[in-house]
Length: 56
Image 1 (cartoon, helix red, strand yellow):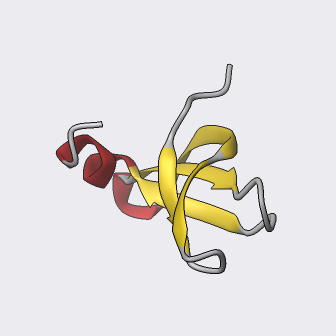
Image 2 (image 1 turned 90 degrees about the vertical axis):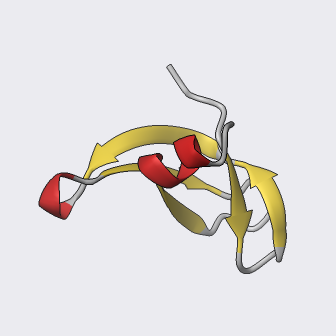
Image 3 (image 1 turned 120 degrees about the vertical axis):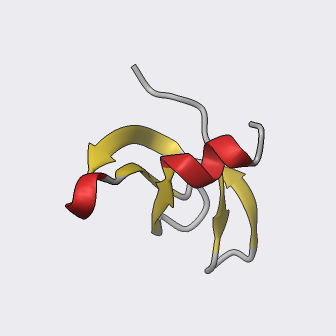
């Protein structure tokens, strides 16, 4: 089940809703959301803690 997460694409230089977003584990017990930009296909990684602090 894909989650709807908004992130910033550095290539398009705007906020977008990530395609194929999924939660992945990283080093040092960090949780990340991994997805792709629907416009350019750039891979985007976001920290879960930073998203929750933005009150999304």
